[in-house]
Amino acid sequence: MQKKEISKAVLKRLPGYLAYLRSIPDGSSPYISATALAGALGMGEVQVRKDLAMVSDGGRPKIGYLRESLMEDISQFLGYDNTTDAILVGAGKLGQALLGYQGFDAYGLNILAAFDAEPVADHTEDGKPIYPMSQLHSFCRANKVLMGIITVPAKHAQTVCDQLIACGIKAVWNFAAVHLDVPDNILVQNENMATSLAVLSMHLQANMKDRK
Amino acid sequence: MQKKEISKAVLKRLPGYLAYLRSIPDGSSPYISATALAGALGMGEVQVRKDLAMVSDGGRPKIGYLRESLMEDISQFLGYDNTTDAILVGAGKLGQALLGYQGFDAYGLNILAAFDAEPVADHTEDGKPIYPMSQLHSFCRANKVLMGIITVPAKHAQTVCDQLIACGIKAVWNFAAVHLDVPDNILVQNENMATSLAVLSMHLQANMKDRK
DNA sequence: TAGATTGTTAATCGATTAACAATC
DNA sequence: TAGATTGTTAATCGATTAACAATC
Image 1 (tube, helix red, strand yellow):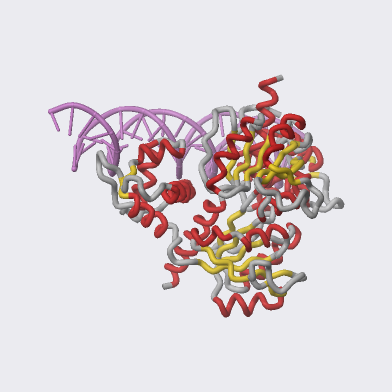
Image 2 (cartoon, chains in turn brown, cyan, yellow, blue; image 1 turned 90 degrees about the vertical axis):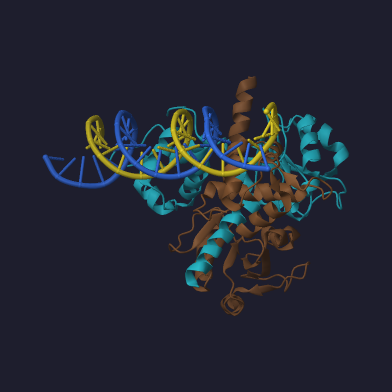
């Protein structure tokens, strides 16, 4: 396994491979080829092979990769093995949906608690605690939280982001549709619905035109 | 305005410009320069200028672009002006959160109704109807729905997707973490949380290493 | 052995950035 | 006029794809 610099493009494809590998039934062959993977995911096989070369220590010609170890390699590479603790700010609808989503376990993400300017309850129906903002700092420090999830309205996002950074957070998952200004060492990952919608509606527009 | 082929890369940046332009208070100057936009969004100014050239019919040297018409150009280009009707399948937590999200109006998206294999209620708290799957086909046909949003568990996503296509849907917004197989003329846009998480946890891992 | 598959090296493609001329 | 800004043309960069040698 070459621990080269990995490009973001590759990084973003890795979860897809892992999800597919995980979905293969237990009884199947313990090996899988890049060809098969590429076919299943509608990708080029050379690309798959190159991507896998970044994280795995190689497949065997004519046979392929050992599925088990490939899954292990990818999930280790992505850091899914050691869970990351996160907190979420903004316990509105979207926030609650994320809090209640069980699937994050599989990605090594553990949302410890939510914070809200005006908590309507002291915990979600799933039993996750909801604290007032005043407790944000002490909680993050006490639990050494490094990731923050922002699900507040756009106009409060920057303020919340600044607070998170002041609490020692290094990575921000931003669901608000605004650009966040942060220092260099902090990563903001935007989950931008508007971006997806743009791609979708462009496709529909083109589609309509074809049929006119 | 050059109606050239627009690349996906550009397309994905346009909503960001629009959101920022919309956030500028009414009292401000009616003009904005690419330089200012780039500064606010932390981007290169040449890139911004090139992107804007794709949708706008030009700014004026020394002055910049007329804010109003720039916003109009972008939103028209993205098809935000004529609203798109969509339906959503899977009225679980995430589905309900999307159903209740008011902000889609600003992007020209109108979710008409939700469908679920086992509806727990006949409408959401916001008053959007929830129908059983049996009514999917007639509803989509009757309302000429072209976009479908999938928020069902991964293992049912492909089946649902096939059903949507059979109902005449041309664009699928997929929140399930699986690859969907579709014919060529159908667009699938994956809203992939796993992808974002990969980028985030990679950053944290690198961060931890630096401090060890 | 023959053929499927891997991994690497080179070629292509596309997108970003730099340089510069044009304009108000 | 001088300078800020636009828009375009050329150069660079990075990622994808193609070609091919290596391997079991």
